[in-house]
Length: 255
Ligand code: CA
Image (cartoon, rainbow, N blue to C red; front, side):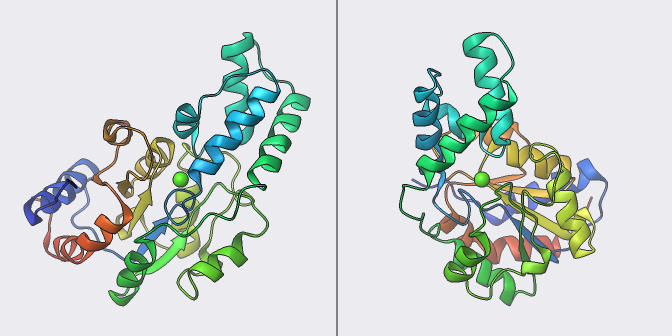
């Protein structure tokens, strides 16, 4: 049974965001979408690639744990596992070798399909006058082509933030702050759509109303603890609730 969000609970989620941040209302101009696990069902392939690559180097990173590191840079993930398994930092050479191998394995998988419900959600947002933009830690070269094939004309390429734009990456708020900056808007004029704890943390730290969609194997608690303002069990569920959420945002004022 999927979690339901009656209108009152949507109002309550928006109300508590406004109170915590001191904003008067949520003015929805833009929606900032994460990519892996939100727009593409690619996370299982990433988790498996991490697990296989680490094993080849004698390191253990269970697939389930890989979901907890989602959004972190490759170097950051490798360093954490190295410290745990060997009690020391990873060297530059190790980071390069392990990450290259992980990418190589990832590229043997078929291209990940679009996440069910994502297109319906983005198109509804556009009909309601929002601009939709992508904020991702990914640096895949084929990114733009893939997005345009699966989501033709939906996302504005000039507003996109990728691995090439940012220095720190999630969970730092930098990628989302840069998304706001590119769009020329403030934190109370956007929402973030994220699937991973570190991504939720980044959206939350940027001061933006952050919607978590739990498309992976982690417990809801992991996303709520990271600062999610609202949680849906899937992109389809968020797409179904969008009209109610949009109405709730339009009527809710800080009390
Ligand atoms: Ca993600």
